[in-house]
Image 1 (spheres, rainbow, N blue to C red):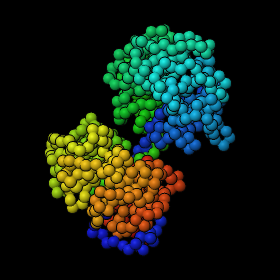
Image 2: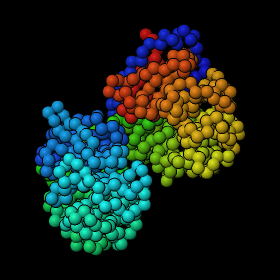
Image 3: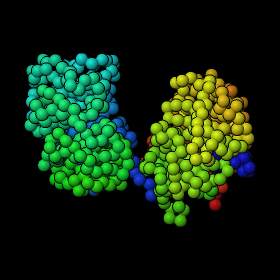
Image 4: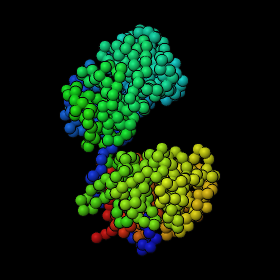
Length: 627
């Protein structure tokens, strides 16, 4: 967000004397977010729970059944699966983005080390054990080989097993060891079973024909191995004869089964992609709708407390949920995850935040965010904009459509793109009914009926290749015919309100996440790219890199009061500040614990008093005016 051109400009010397930023967190009222990829209860200490996170990465541990959580910062990668060893006390196995890790409990906490014998930098997706305690892990090769499947007999070293007959670069996603045989689910190539006893080390693989070549994401086996369930993109499959034959199960809902768990009484729970929970009391032969979370989205894991069968934990793409009544009702676990902000807007003197679960409005009197939006589902809000004609008319681009509010966010209704993610919004100040949007993984569309009841949309990407993915839009102040589109592979410019676009050769091949134009000097344009910050002094025709090499720049802000002072938000490397027009840069951390967060948006308040930052570790603000 840029300041208005009418602000008084300070001299370069004044910019050089800018004081350190003093940030204050403004997280209160936001709900934490953390995609929980896996959950495990420790069989040796059932009050101990481990959680594997996807983004932000790492592990969480609880020693009191989930009341309090502590993050282990040593694992800086996605934890696809966590599994407490059934034999070795105090040992947790983690299938991560860079391999299998053995995490051991010591007096001072948990320590990790790479599993001996697991190939370096081979991603792992699953770790499990047979009823006899033999450990198995599977993943994908980085070097164009068959999927990696390995076994450990002693919990120390891992040895390779016979390779799957699937193409190179395919992955083994899930394993189950049953009755001396091993079942392996793959990413699009079906379910395989070892044709022979795996203990002999000399066996071949056989494709399960009833399931065919599809994505098999999960396997579950009963303790005696007689019952097997396979979660696939074709649905749920069931075997009652130790995997000899399989039948597809009729489910009461459409969609993909995402996660499965069993209770001590034999009841089975199945998480569906729409946020619903199904339950079966006849060994998976039939299912009924049991309950639902407060929002849709992927389930990654279900786990039942071994000390209390009424307590179930659900790991989802939106965070951790808990049920204390056998899955009938659910609530989000508030102390797991990060309070993430995605986009910011000031309109009509009010501040709005787009977050993972809707739109929030800042209330200065209570110093809290309050979720607003009757009619707006719990959707990820990626873009916000206000009508130039009326700041009470707001638009929210979400991960499933465009919503409009006519009453400053109090109520919303869907007005377009119900099946698409809307990532960016741009109004034409000379034509308040004209709205340009860019769509997730796509290009630019516009409507001349933004304030109408049923806007129609026209494609506006002539001159862009079919593969173009627009990531940012900007307009030249005072000249709405001049538009800039930052894309995944370069910059495009239009001089006729998006009727036609042309590529700028100087930035070809770079991903551009933000484009901003100096309102006081419209010939000056900035773009944030995967390899730093670039500036043009001739309306985007030629470019020079002005710093932050090898840093992905995602957001920019500066004040016309101090034109030589720039702020740059980055991916994974926090906020940076330059006092000299971008020639040199210094970090401007929010706090010591939030050094490497990603900055999704920056906003300078209209009065120049506050700089706001929406990040993966919450929302922050710093006062810019001296006392």
